Image (cartoon, rainbow, N blue to C red):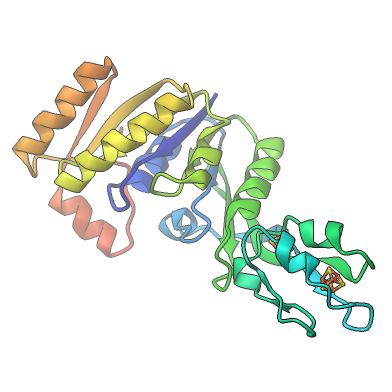
Length: 264
Ligand code: SF4
Ligand code: SF4
């Protein structure tokens, strides 16, 4: 069984719910922290992580000796990552590049070669019955997709027991990528106006991906009107709603770095 834990809005307690599930699973479980820009499961569990791999992206390198300054590569580039000034070798803007290598394919003299650049690492650690995997994106990189894909490929391939995937927050491609392998999705929200707004959006994404899902509403008790709306959404969709009461004691301990499951 593969369960993806996701949430449209950051800060709703998505990782808190995912880790609580893993800690109370009572048998070997694989936990994949797919939020590669800000992985925090290992920090919350206090787990020592070890590098087991890396992810790479393709970048073009122009041989200035071979280049005949025709500009074809810059014209072909779909994202303006090559700037052509007549009479000069095109200028490469790495931040824009998506690694498609179309520029290499169109170069008439073979002046462009493909190089692999590391964009982040994949790590593994053990905590009690949990095998934890995460990815760390290089802070200078903007495109996390190759790292999320490699992390999922590696972790799902080596998975022991059931799998919990803790996705990034938001509604974007890398969240969809992390939901795709799941048999079931848990959507975590909170009773705030932003929480309700983003819940409606993530429900649409999960339904588009045709995944069965249920809703966990964290911090229950802080806003009656928003709670009513969350109950309505769950009723309209015919899905199970689990309410997790807001606890000042939990928030205080969490702030001090002491993690306790919110689900028993
Ligand atoms: S690899 Fe693709 S995106 Fe990057 S410079 Fe070449 S054509 Fe543009
Ligand atoms: S297509 Fe090749 S030869 Fe033409 S400008 Fe680009 S690198 Fe130079």
